[in-house]
Amino acid sequence: MSDSPVSLTLPPAGYADWLADLKTRIHTAQQRATLAVNRELVLLYWHIGRDILTRQADQGWGAKVIERLAQDLRSAFPEMKGFSRANLMYMRAFAQAWPDADTVQQAVGQLPWGHNLVLLTRLKDPLQRLAYAQSALAHGWSRNVLNIHIETRLLERTGTATTNFDARLPKPYSDLARESLKDPYRFDFLGLTEEAQEREIETALVRHVTDFLLKLGAGFAFVGRQVLLEVGGEDFFIGLLFYHLKLRCYVVIELKGGPFKPEHLGQLGFYLTAVDRQMKAEHDSPTIGLLLCKSRNKVVAEYALGDKSQPMGIAEYKLAQSLPAEFETSLPSIEQIERELTKDDEP
Image (cartoon, rainbow, N blue to C red; front, side, top):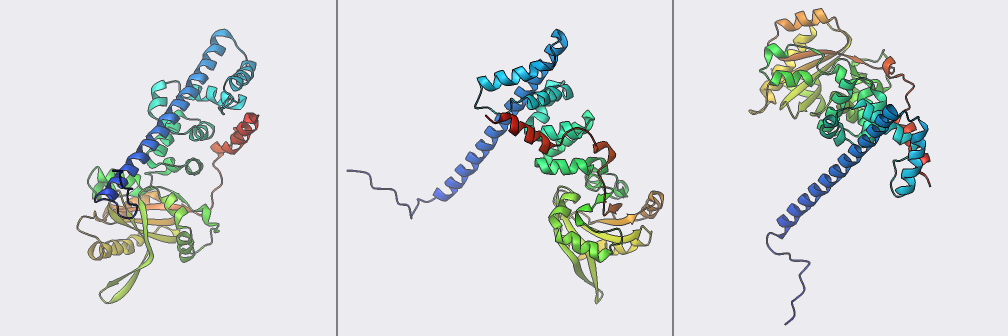
């Protein structure tokens, strides 16, 4: 007796859950395989670069050997891209930038080669390169996002806002909260002039909320703009309200179109109290306030925060920012590198 065909309309009990589990395991295996291939490729590039450095130093080989090596490798492995003269030069520079194999295996080796080229061409300091590499891994930054964060000096601005978190929040929560804020915040993507008013900036930030969240950093989720809170029969509106997924708390952001004044914290504190009493859930941490102003005197800000019992931070925002001088370099951009690699790898 032949087996009856399997019904496609009535799967057996438990099939859907089993299929979902299989899909998850397959996706996970694919991701691990991709990461493993990437690590092996980057490590191979590092070894090639180190060999070039060693032989040039020990045996006095000149730069022309790289051009010959490119031709020979492409002839031996015509199906593989990445053996152009330009890319071999970057392998050499990569090995020179990371002389320790452990660092390559544990940090930058887990990033795609394109990410490593961004780190190599945009940053000169090894500690900066490593810090951005670790952040790219931790937050899953794409190459374009990594490039943006380097150009806007994200890590150099992280944790530099004036806050009272150390005194008002328990450790390590206070450290995480402080590292979640920056100073200054770059809003050059809005295309607004310095004369823009508070509401105009708020409107533009909400219109570009994806870019705004990128500027705020990992963990921020947008709740709303001009959020209504009724207190004592009166209506009050919070400028911008967010929820931080790692800190597990609401974050109230208030914009001030001029310089910081101590009285600004009174209004911010009122909003924090209202959110804590009306919106904060039992499992949520205390609401944090961030005051963004066009400029601030750091000493005045520290004095103003000194007697505040609620966790608050004060930072500046910039509506336009030119590329920092240290990034105005003769090194080629990642786009130029890609064009060179594509041109050289064409048959």
